[in-house]
Length: 223
Image (cartoon, rainbow, N blue to C red):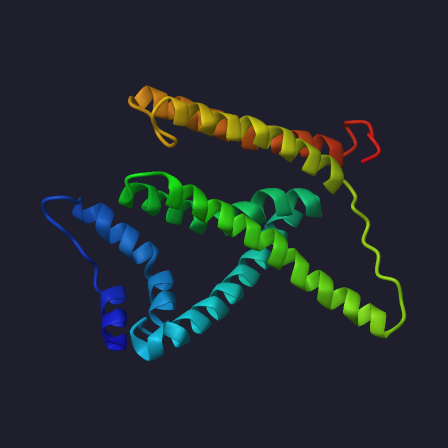
């Protein structure tokens, strides 16, 4: 079964009735590196799936480390601060897999619970584990050395305040859609594009306000 994963990764899949040959081949060879990367993960049927889970988690961590380093170099070359690099390039690179997973969940289920639950679960894991575990390790290390461990918040407090305010609007949109008969999507293509523009606008507004504060264009509010 593991050998079949490499065959599936190397050989392109094409359906004459549904796809365009040139587009299929182009996308296949663009993503073949990632397909081979994923094929290295053992099949889920082995040992009740434990090797698959552990190795996939390790490879995901290694991939995120690569994305982080590349994003930081790209942000540095563009003159972005560490905060803006993390909230734009790094965040985008690490969140796109969740976006595609939520899309598949939304297409495969008859309700929005799985799609929104995936996003909320992923962000909860990032906040409570992604920040909590390194913080505990760092504080324990400095506690053993009998040294205080302090980290300056910088512009993060203001960004969190803006995020909370904009998230209220985002949740309000979802509640409005639920009372209208559907939490995700819309009945018309125009309605779908309007929802997309609204949520995209919230994200862009968050980046703009955070960037203005980080670069000193907004006065310090003492947060």
